[in-house]
Length: 281
Image 1 (tube, one colour):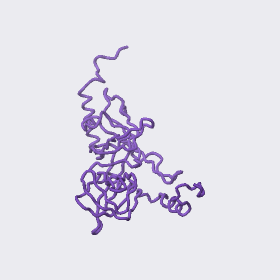
Image 2 (tube, helix red, strand yellow):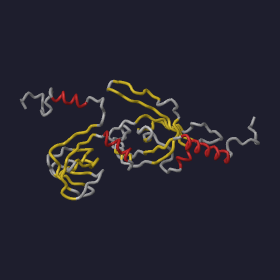
Image 3 (cartoon, rainbow, N blue to C red):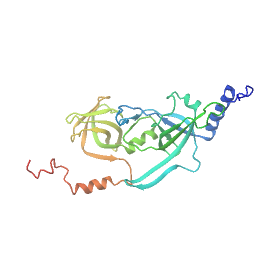
Image 4 (cartoon, rainbow, N blue to C red):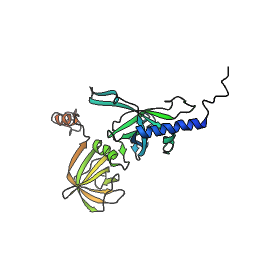
């Protein structure tokens, strides 16, 4: 038996627009201010389907509703094989009309990040459910974004928002030098090159301590020589590095990597080029 021609449930534009208006207004009232960080893929590995050099260069303010009512979901914090792991999951809801007005992409994408100022944490989108409210009034009004706490792995985060960019500074492997500038001023994110070693690195942070100028480098390729001169690829600034370098490998109070490295240095001579030759070669 065919459906009635007198009741238009799924193609009434005015009611669909009303539903969208109610969704947008509800999220604006009960939701949270977040920032959406689209992932930029710079060098995709077609075999593994990954991009080890991906970056996040922009952040879009957007309101989202948190569907979790009793806190974070997932396995939470537990001690696993590799130490303390925190696997917090959360589901955000964003109105389609709000999303379309951002002009980012056709839909939210897996792998992109969401910054939640309430907890000062980044969450990575694992799955996008585009049929959350299943064709109510004949239209799909929202996206549900299933997210998990982001685990930083040397991605470049340069959004221009200090709180978000601080995630990279706190977690990236970097080396800090005291330097004396010969000319000009370095800029963050520019590539510097050593005159003698030809080593390269990216400027992560510039700071001062008393009368000393400090430069913090990351994405280091090669080894800088002691007191050698470096040149900025963008600014053209030249400077001489100090002989002392301070390493940073992320602020994780539960990690044991430094303890293991220090202990191993007392057991194994890592300066030996061929430890199995017994001096015969």
